[in-house]
Image (cartoon, rainbow, N blue to C red; front, side, top):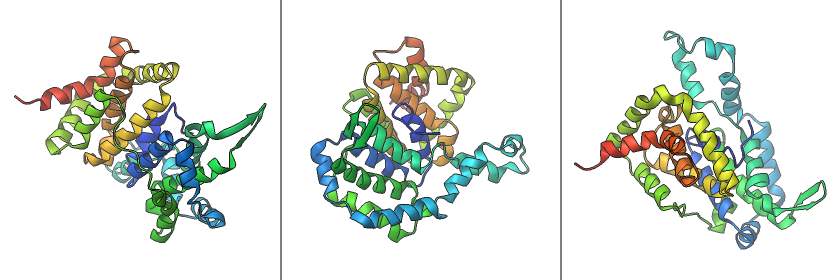
Length: 297
């Protein structure tokens, strides 16, 4: 499945289940907030011809095989058949919890063609990325890939891919510019075990209504698209990835609904003035329960 600005919540779902997914989110947030000056700064640190062999190693070697295997496994009849078999499903379900929706080429594409869409020069049906901006995109893509595939890369390759981005010394702070979203993410990022347990209980409590979550999320995403807030919403979703990891939530939390609950609350808050009350209430139901349970007194 390709990643896009429209389905950044799906990208976020992959990132919160990767060991260094929050680092990918930080790189993508830098890309979202960068203009010509920032891209020029990144381009200055491009490593030239030494870049290509590292990408050949990542894409052609076995380093990324774990993610590809998990993706293949997730859609097999065997996976579906044994999901309820307590005798044989434990290992399989753990692998399914890690099964990726997208892959590394999809990550590179959303960065180069969606997030940095404005860097492309177009004439009719022809399009080419501005050469200087393409160098900056290479630096961003290398840094994102080094974190996305970290568990399948040797340390030397990972550090070499990330070094040009780090040398540019660009960073995006945690703020989204939306007070209600920032308040939500600050609460998530500072979660302790009682707070994490409250999220899990709230997810379980609203699980019977899960069938209504996807239509509500679709409405929220369509609303931010029509209101030209896709980039704002994408940045907020990526900030949520960082908050989720800083708050100590685990892969299992993501796989069993906590990420969807957080992602939905973020999307609904970005689109708060655009959504019907019922959709907004559905997407924020878990967060409302958590906030009520943890409120003083």
